Length: 326
Figure 1 (tube, rainbow, N blue to C red):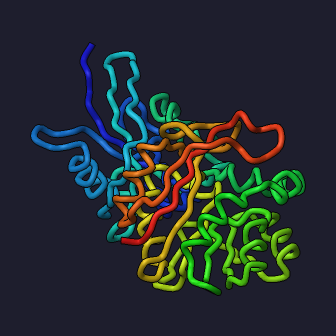
Figure 2: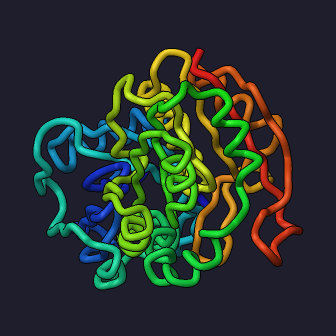
Figure 3: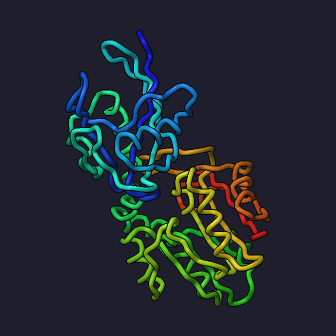
């Protein structure tokens, strides 16, 4: 059976916050009226990314930026085998126009199965939906009471004291992904100025009340601080940033620190992306965490593996690191 090598663009409205994707309806050929992700054949001498840029310009009249490979789909149609490289993409210049397709739609996650997809494209929907839905925030919103109760009294004094010893007296700390506000409160009681943020509305509500000050509505991708903090505390929070976005996030945190500032971060012990229930985690170990920090301009000061401090979860392993801005 003949193999046809093609590329497909999953064009999203925003690469970091994927709320919509662009679907097109074929206007020609054996599969006319079927819905697909735009793209086409790879020509001789082209890389998949080059082919995708050319195809979208020809089909939709716009220039795109090609991002990460989502998946490679292999599917047997009646007369040929399709080998399809599928990439996230965003519009870089121009406006999407229907030059070859019959129709097009921007689809939100709940609408993904509202059109009649071609079989090969249908195989991508689960991965696309997973990337579009932030199940992590949804989890904390739905379980805010139990998470607050289970974490607010967890003993993090060992890690905090080691972190505090590296800070100037009355310094400014960013509690990045503050959760219950447990550590923010400890820093405030120790005389530090604290700025705290969290992505979960329900956790912000509880933490703000607990602290007696507003917790900012912010995600890691929103960080835009410059030379403002003596320390960044990211306890069990950076672990929800996708692995491919962590290098940029770490560089932003570096920029947010004053010269010589320090950062603490903890991750579940492991390697790479893991799904635990509906939540996505980026796991690290004592070796991989060093590269993450050093590539972002930090010098590792402490790097230890330890157990969970919450009652009943002592079997869970974590890697904890403190680093200084180089």
